[in-house]
Length: 216
Length: 265
Image (tube, rainbow over all chains, first blue to last red; front, side, top):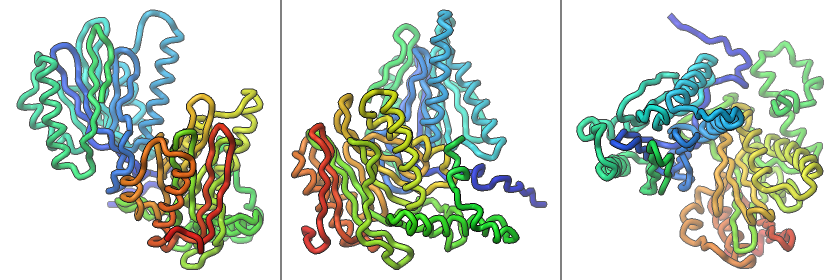
């Protein structure tokens, strides 16, 4: 039995192919917060075209969002999140959006686009620390709207290569140094085994007191 | 919503007699007719045709992105930016225009290198020229390069399923000095120190990576751009003709033209 979708305005609303893409994003919880890492490559098919692409977006002092997949869609999502944050700022009520809320928001956005057969071609990782309760949060949303939360998350190739490492070595009470070295190990494996990857990466961490710090 | 392609096309009535045909075929004919009409009526060059119109396949999507028949590049030097492009526009195998100007002025100190479908890039540029003019009137001063780049990126992104346009926006403004923004297929916007685009760029990626230096002077940068484009032209059949360059800095804009027989190769 064939299920066919009527091509309503087929030109304007159709499933896209990704052009400029990013590869894996990794995130793990450690004792003081969460750590996220990704490389800085924007690949154009098999060509390693842009080597200075920021694939981690700081939403507010408590949350960061990393994306793999189509970079233009991620830039669009960053705009949406910036609008959310600005609105939050304008309310001026002392409350900021928590990572869980941002994760839920992105789930809805991506799932709704998927329902319109016009997905945002991204696998997103939302990570942060809830400012009130001090709990770390890591969540993932895919382009089909699939979402889950866990202590360690990886997208794209990292799913196959890094998650076994995380499963083995990640603990919620790791120290920052242990977490960083585990992350670097995972990144090294990805650089060896993922063809579109480069050895330039970003590490971003969110901690309860200190907020977000992003470094190369 | 003004930016949706259907409202930009004013040529519909002329092709109404084809209404009985299937919708898709009609659309393909629109694009082909509009493309050639654009080229003739405006007296400007067709950068490259919509090969899709002839192959009957809207988006021949494989893992590799579609390459665009030209060579364009832009680079920052000490005081500003230099843009360069070849001058060939091909319709299949025929060279439709051998003296094309692919470096389009968006504003006094902002230019864009166009690659991909001529109709798409020309119309995108026309929109942005219009927006920037209005914007600069309200602003009271020259628009910023980032503004132009973001406008083009937004247009490219919102209409990504319908457009085939690879653009490089470069210019100089007071706020950030010389900047180069690359906007490939799909509408991503990336700021870089130098950028190359078009089908010919594949042949010079290594050359350009190896020979680029930061902080060149204007003459060095222009010579570098001319040499690189020449190398691309020598190996890419879709690039050729002469090399046009534009150098933009605080002092002004300088256009240069290097004839085909005087190329450094």
